[in-house]
Length: 302
Image (cartoon, rainbow, N blue to C red):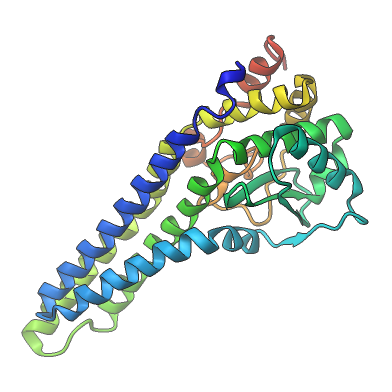
């Protein structure tokens, strides 16, 4: 089991490069289509430059975007001593630099890790999590998030947020351009307007499915791996198992929950209450009962 702690590191790096390259090619393809429509090769050059800049931006700033989306504020040692103490001790044990710590003011208990590498990582927890977990349970959650950092899960997971968000913005742009009259000149303007409207419709339909496919490509297995790695780190699997029981039984969705970032969290941020059909079919997390069973060796009974 020990050999599994960081075995997915290389796989996650390969997946990160794959999705970044795929997104780069997609944007260039869109640029080429519109350079042909308008008969202007400069459009293609602009899309190439923009694609490069967007990928650089995603690498360097995607973590800040996620933290901002969920209104995370820096946590101080004085105000959150138990959180600091647990993270500091477990980071030393794991041989990782201590991540920056953030707290989100939300009664729904949850946590996530983000950052481009272990030297520039962050862990965020909600106030609800800090309120309901005891020391060993909090250590279990932090160990789980540190395992994501060690496995290089968070770079891939965080870049996905920017990519999915940009696809959504593109679809909105094409639809608005079509409605406002996407070109000049009667025949050519009508042709451009029709193509932009068609592209917008296609992207609008496909964007949620693109998000789902990318998230599923990351694999639910990473949660089982982070659970087992975290249990090895604390040497007390019951701590994380108890934390998962409390988190899943809370049921209240996070105020800032959204489909683009759902895969980042230790548990489904939409809560355990009424879940939309789409969330049930394409859940980014394994069922809590299965995770607890893997940690404790016995099945949960309701």
